Length: 135
Image (cartoon, rainbow, N blue to C red; front, side, top):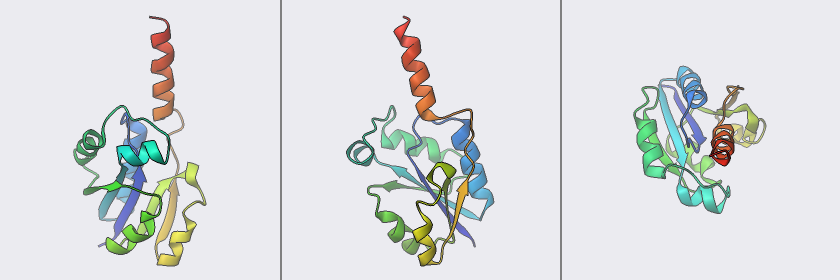
């Protein structure tokens, strides 16, 4: 069985996320999604999420491509996760290209997937913010 892992915040879940998860699942048999916790998002990424970690986890678990959702609590856990879950392929959006090549040292194939160019959570938040300015 080929095990795949990917990471993200997955706030304001949209079809770009679904595309990424579909592509990730197509790489193997079992997909683990590591979803950033609220604390990690705030303390390390300086991002406030619209949905809580538990809500985002529930949404991810409802997607047919996802086999398991676990929390991301720090940047360093990637190396530990690939060992603990016997990962064959690490994948993430190509906006991170080159940043996780160090995982190849763990015997993991690293694949950067193309993002859906016309959509992002940041874009959604900015659009919603600018629309509320007119109200």
